[in-house]
Amino acid sequence: MTEYGIVVFFQLALLVAVVILREPKLLIPCVVLGLPFEYASTQAVSTLGESGTGGIIRTMLNPGKAAMIATIVVGVVRARHNPRVLFPNSAIIVPLVALLAVVVLGVGWSESGLTNAVMIMPMYVAFVFVAPSLIEDRQDLERIVIAFLVAAAVLSVVAVSLKKNGVFQWRSILIQADDYSYRSNAFFADPNNLARFLAIAMALGAGMILVTGPRRLTVHLAVPALVLSALALVLTASRSGWLGMLLAAFLVVVLAPIRTYTKVRLTTVAFGGLALLLALLFMQGGSNAERVKSLGAGVELIGQREFLIKGGWEMWKDNPLFGVGSGNYQHTLVTSYLWTLPWWAQTTLSHTSFISILAELGLVGLSAIVLLATRIAAACRSAYRLSRERYSRLMVVWCGAALIEILFQSQSEGRLLEEPFLYLLFAIVAALEMGAGTRGHDPIVEPAADAAPEAAVRTEQAGAKRRAPVPAAGKP
Image (tube, rainbow, N blue to C red; front, top):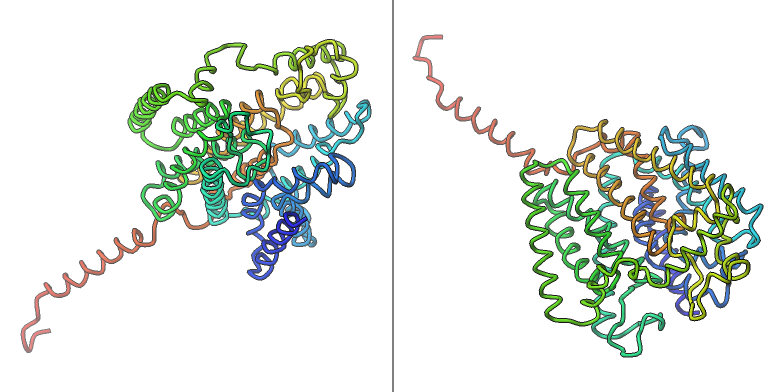
C-alpha cells in the first residue's frame, strides 16, 4: 500500500501545482509526464481486478489518466458559458465518435461484457474533445515538447539504472533464468511500451534539433534526452521498438521542413552509423545481438503470435461483419477456438491490433478504423498547409510519424485503441488543425536573435548622427 500512497501523493501534487499556478494548460504536460507511470495500476490487478468498478479505480492509479480526467473537468467548467469550444472543428472528430460507437455497440454481442478497455475509451475520446481548448498557441505546444523530452530522459535514466544495478525489478516475468537478459521497462508495465514511448520521443528530439537549431531547449534538453533514450531503447530489447524508432525518425527527417540536401546527408550518415553499430553489436554478441539477428527470421519472428493470428482469423471468418464483440478475443479463443492453440501455448492475448479489430469488430470496425486513419491524414495535411512556420510544420510531421509508429508497433505488441498516447496525439493534431501552431511567439526565434538587428539599426543611426556635418556659425 505504500506504493499506492506515493502515487496518490504525486497525483495530488501535480493537481495542486496546477491550481496554485492557476494555469490549467499545464494539465496537458501533466498527462505526458504521468502516463508512463504504470507501476501502481499494474501491481493492483490482483487486488482490484481488471474490469468493473475495481478496474476503473485501478486505472485511475495512473497519474496521467487522472490528469486526463482533470483536463475534462476543467475544460467543461471553463466552457460552461460557451460550450461550442468543446467541439473542435477538426476532421478527426466525427470518425473518432463513429469508432467509439462501434466499440460500445460491440459490447452487445460480446460474451465478456463491459471490459475495462471499453469503459475507459469514452474518457479518451472526451479528452480529445476538450484538450484542444487548452492547446491554443506555440507556447502550449512548447510545454508539451518539454514534457515529452523530460519524461524520456527520466525514464531512460531509470531504465539504465534497473539494468546496471538490478534494483526495482518489479516484474519478475521480465527476468530470465540466467539473470542476464533482463529487459528494462522503467515505470511502464512492459518494455515494449517503454520502447514505443522512447521511439516517438526520440523522433521529436531529432526533429527539434534539425529544425530549430542550437537553442536552449535543444542543447540542454533534446540532445541529452536523445542520447539517454538511445541507450535505454537498446536495453528494452524490443525489436518492434527498434524498428519503430527507425521508422518514426526516418519519417520526421524526410518530411521535416529542412533542405533536401540536408535530408539526404543525414539519412546517409544515419544508415552508415546504424551499420557500424550493428557490426559492433554482432562482434560483441549477447542476447541483444541474437534478437537483432532474429529480425531476418521471417515468419518465425512472430513466434507465439502466429497461432494467435490464426485464431483471430478463424473468428473473423465465422463472424465477418460484426466480429465476436468488443474485448471478446481472449475469451472466445480459449472457449470456442481452443483447437487453434498448440499444447505448449502460454499466451492467449492478441498481440496484433489488426487481427484484434477484425476478430472483435469485423468489417464494420475495420471500416471505422480506415475512415479515422483517412481523416487523420487529411487533418495533418490541412494543418501543414495552414502554417508557413517551420516549428508548427515540424509538430504536424512529428504527430503523423508518431501515429504511424504506434500503428506499426501495435501489429506485433498490440495496444492500439488502448494506447493513451494515441488520443493525446489526436488532441494535438486537432489543435494544430485549428491553428495552434500559427499563434503566439515562434520558439525558433530566440530573443537574442530578435534584439541583434535592432541593436545594429540603433548603432547605424548613432553613427550617422556623428558623421553629419555641423552647420557653420551664423548659418541655419
